[in-house]
Length: 115
Image (cartoon, rainbow, N blue to C red; front, side):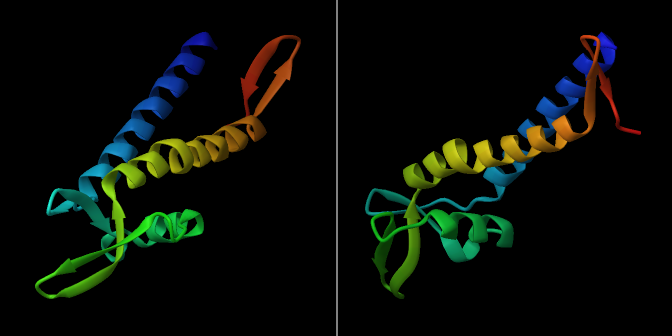
């Protein structure tokens, strides 16, 4: 049982780390006049929906380029704050809630109800 617990938790950690790495690799960071930013329109649909629930006018920035004004930008530092502190935390809580629904503790031992 301890082996299963450690194996499952290690797997969950690796999967979570891998998922976060994939997300961060898919983010296209840009720089303009020393400002590092991300365009929200270039995020995946899932990330775009999630971050839009958090965004405020204080976080959104406009970048004026030769092509015009980009109105859907957020600084990289603000995105990283959101990703590490809010998005990742919500993901962990959802997984934890789902995991607790799949386990049962009897006489001090935790049994997984996973198949």
